[in-house]
Image (cartoon, rainbow, N blue to C red; front, side, top):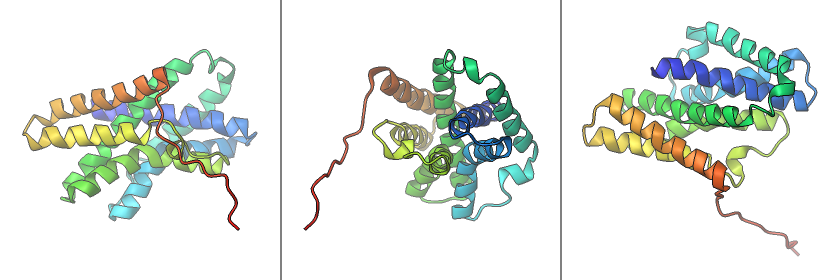
Length: 204
């Protein structure tokens, strides 16, 4: 089940990335690169930091074709994307929690400390979007007021807590995903925001 959700997640991330690239009037090579970076970048950064090889897209090159196909398809239906906004927000939230669980599991398999497991999940869930925004010259969503990283951390924390009390891995995964998904969707619906640091005075 998690693998199927992963395929859906990388496809959706690639499609949303294509729209960001389109707003910057990139050519199709640029669109595909932004799609790859967004969909697969989080796992790549995680693997580099943790020294885990090979990369998922090296071991499974078909992921490159899937994400490129999703990006091209998004370009074709770009005119209808606004009408499908909620669906994409929902699928993007699902992608966030699925990536987070995958990142946590990989760090667990490497027998790393709990803090690193949580960070591994958050990096997997959020880093691809940061790379996308940086390459598209936007302030990364992770650094803005939206509850994005918070939903990832909650997902990882619930998953680890349930694993600690010896709940089955299947139940822990589903429960953690639902918790993170609920927070992300509620934050979108009610515009929940993190406190912001605002500083305008000039230093003398």
